[in-house]
Length: 346
Picture 1 (cartoon, rainbow, N blue to C red):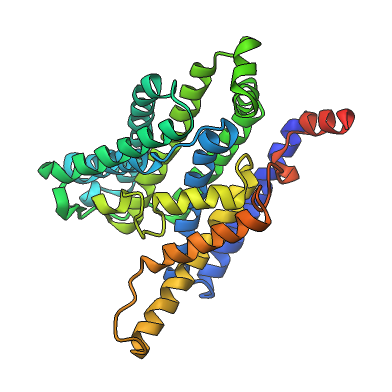
Picture 2 (picture 1 turned 90 degrees about the horizontal axis):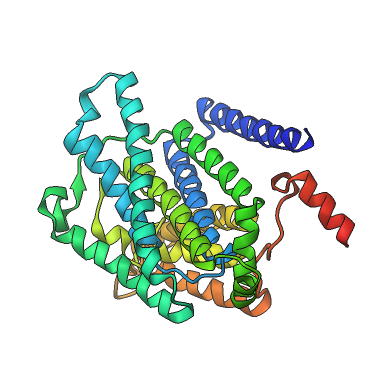
């Protein structure tokens, strides 16, 4: 009953935040530009928390999140734009089909995550990182070679169906599901693998099964986030999903969010996703302003934001190696039974 009360509080706070943002938008304090930044920040929350399930809670080092994003993005984009052509439909079938497309994008990404995970998750450390990075590049190059989805031109004409309400709903549900996974038996098995994989195997934990499970869960939500993203930007391009993409929701940015926020903390990922998304936009505006002043004999590219990200990561790792939150969580995300057990064992 108490756990239900805490979950209810989480939804009440989320509802209040939603109403406040809607009021600020309706009175003109938040314009469409600010709302798009909020949309991207919410999508980055889904991406960072889902990658944290793999890297932070299970202790694997995956660099393939961009590949799963791309699979979800192109699956949903092809369904809504090329197959169902929802752009001319009425609101009800249009948004119903959009939700189905987003979920299918996640499902296809999860299936690929399982297919990739079964053979490769027997690897550890650097070897797993190399395999997942190679997977991401295979997906990117493969999409680039398929003319049906636009090839190097990208998939254009995607309708803007990711409204603020829709993205907010998916983000809230994603956090709720991942929170419950983290504090379930499955989550405890994942954490045991992170702490000591050999010891986990010795006490009977099927480490390969739980690593594949973490991979498929992370891939599903990355696919959902990718599908939402391309329906905000109204295009899907292979370069958006390259590891060093300067995109505001690029795979390298998401990886940085996980480690700056704290590997093993959903709260840390939420904070880092919001802060770094806003920072990224401020940097873009700053770079545009510098270019406009013509101070330098060359044009500063948007990729320099990645340099700032890298410096920020170095500083955080030097002075706060565990990230902003470490492995701590906001109290609202911790079930009361878990909190009681932690207090009792202290």
